[in-house]
Image (cartoon, rainbow, N blue to C red; front, side, top):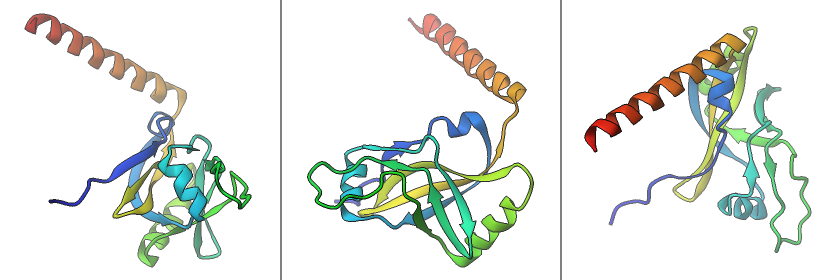
Length: 153
């Protein structure tokens, strides 16, 4: 029997709409036990989350993890959490975010071999006209799929 596939628990659907993804990295995340259980239950949100390199360490800010209902420990839902990456990757991220308009955005949280991972993207903000173009491309693709489906039936 093979290894179980990576199970994606939380996606930041807004990230690819609001940002041009330049590069992506896999990061480990330091969590408390009850936070892991909440994430497995899908009770977390990446909507306003971002990462920042501070004093040689990578931190995730703004990720909301709802408190696990059976936990005794009271943890702040939006506390900053440390991300674990290799030194070379950290240096690459620090260099990239030094440029104007570039930020670190989490794309998804998933479990790999039983450990929580965060896919972190080096991203550049989109302008309003880029967002309109994205919507137009998505609508055109949807229309083309409908037309092809109509031909097959």
